[in-house]
Amino acid sequence: MNLRFVIDPVLTPELREQIVALWVDVTNAGGAVGFVAPVTAAEVRPVAEETFAGLADGLDRLLVGYEEDRPVAFLVIADNRFNLQAHWRPLKRVMVHPDTQGRGYGAALMREAERIGHELGLEALQVTVRDGQGLGAFYGPLGYREVGRLPAALRLAPGDDRDEVFMWLDLNGRGAA
Image 1: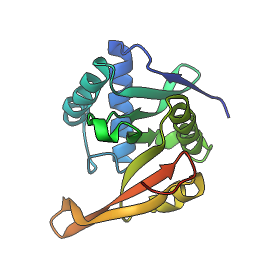
Image 2: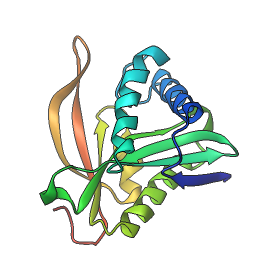
Image 3: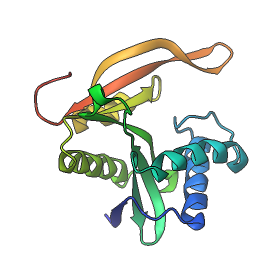
């Protein structure tokens, strides 16, 4: 595997555009990352800019996986912005470029997030997934377990409602909080 990770890279205009392009490619390949295909960069950019704004204040952390100089994976380790939840973080915008899937990059990205979680002294990580994508089979072997779901919380299209599933990784071996 030829993947290297950078935590909190400088968000240059070039990197911002690369992240938007990655987000578009992942969505259009069927990825569950906040949109329903087909999507354009113009549609993704405002949501990406909100994500970048959360990084600018230093509370959220950006983890980017590079194949050579090309960003092919990223996620955000988000701050809960609530003192009673300071001991754990949600992972948001978890994605790997579709043309690199099958190389173990997704698992490597999640293991790197776990390593950073330990480094930050966190007790748990949480990720939310869209039901019907088979993502439980991906996160389960990484140690995540389902801890809840909101029935039909995501409306992809009229008549296509999906559960929003909450997955939890206990970093201290105590079980879900």
